[in-house]
Length: 265
Image 1 (cartoon, one colour):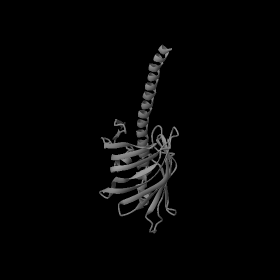
Image 2 (tube, rainbow, N blue to C red):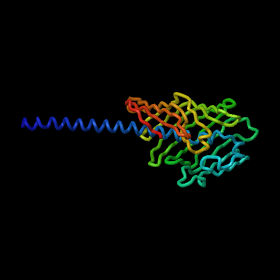
Image 3 (cartoon, one colour):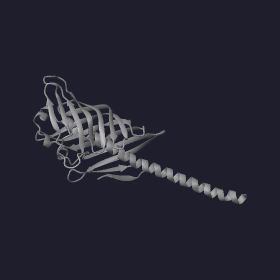
């Protein structure tokens, strides 16, 4: 009997060690998945930002094929609305955009300085966006953005819901929009129902020429600090965006366990 007990102890120890290794592997995998989820959220929020920064007057004169996805542009001067319909775009092969973006601008002669961007069945690559974002001029070239209940759903039904506020500076070059420089934060729930928060630790810079080219969907440069609540812990992910040639961006993640991971390209 003693021999049996002696043999059982090593077996139990091996089983416990195996469980610990499995748990550690799961946690490490979750951290990698979380970092990619954060990148998806950042991409989804930033991808359509420039569409909101184009003025109502510009939309009245702009040609469809000058915008990414060549949306059908419908301007209603009476109601102050601009509808961008991507369901019949110009993109070759599989379209990366579908659905509509609906912009509501102040009516002509109004003293209002606030406009909105709403998503109607809008999807980009493998995620879909729902909700409305509000923008207000705080000075000539500075814009305050706020949103609540913004929903991002991936193709495998993973949903994140967010609210937030950002300050955007429109940078001009020869009287034309050149860059958008942003600072701010967002918070909400990730697909697992955990609380998350992102704050920009440095200026987020997005290039307008790269946006028009359709080659870039990420910030050219930025530093994001993401926090996720797990039980009584707040785990931190740091995402750093570095510009490369041809409107490409390298994204590196520093995970809570100290590992580094290149997410893009």
